[in-house]
Image 1: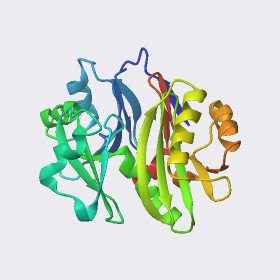
Image 2: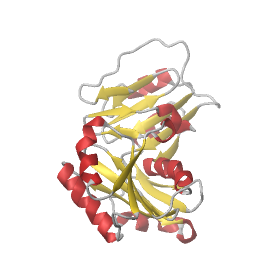
Image 3: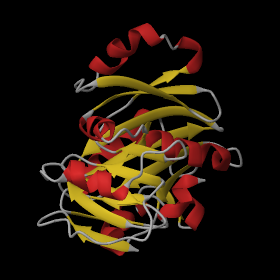
Length: 261
């Protein structure tokens, strides 16, 4: 496990034997984390030395592969058969603010399009050093990891991606994706309020639905205990489904190499 605090993050120039040619970047509101086989570090978005840092880390060549995973972009989910690329702004403006370029990901099972707006700050920096990047939304990552798993499940499954300041709810019913939303929270009471609100809206009962947490972390034990009073709960703890747990002050990357599969 790797853990760092956002406060006071700074870059210390290091000599590395060879430049990075493959990396995954986790992009948050005010900082981003670069993860590669050679190096792993966090950088603040307002660091004035970023162009030179990126130039030092990456070589501009045809084999370079950099993917940015956007945790700072709230998505809208559109069924594939109804998706119209010309209406992406309409899909987004109903639930979030459009902050930049519009992008859509197609899920691996080709059933949904994930529409989101990206801040092009990092893209512009990489353009300056002649490096192309690809983009994905964090929801795309989670959905693609789950859809194979739910093919072995029956009834309602409420998957919960929980962190200190918000949580995502992803619902499948008899193997079909039916709902996604993100809720900002301040404490476990707000978590329970929104969780029960969603369960009641989908007519869940203690007999036939499951709440499945993505990951299991000691700091959330009280949240798990509260949820267990109203429903069966399970956890996905194996490395294949480990996800990234973070908040505005700190974060931990759990088995990050599995994201590249």
